[in-house]
Image (cartoon, rainbow, N blue to C red):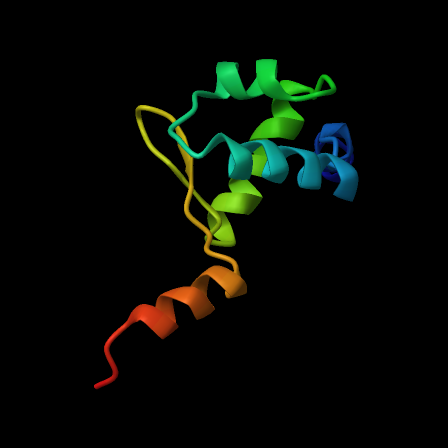
Length: 92
């Protein structure tokens, strides 16, 4: 039984940092709702479907994207964008 679990866990491919950054970059620069199929076509290199799903799960758990029924949307605001919003905001 434990050998089956070990084989199943080893079958999963973990994405490299470069692959995660590549997917982040495409999602960030798209600026609109995008489907998984369209995301795959926009990536500069091919990524295995399971690997892409693991990356998307990670990005969703870290609060950078939202995955809905119509697609994926980048929602993470970088610090410089937050600083600009704070400067324009009203102080309470």
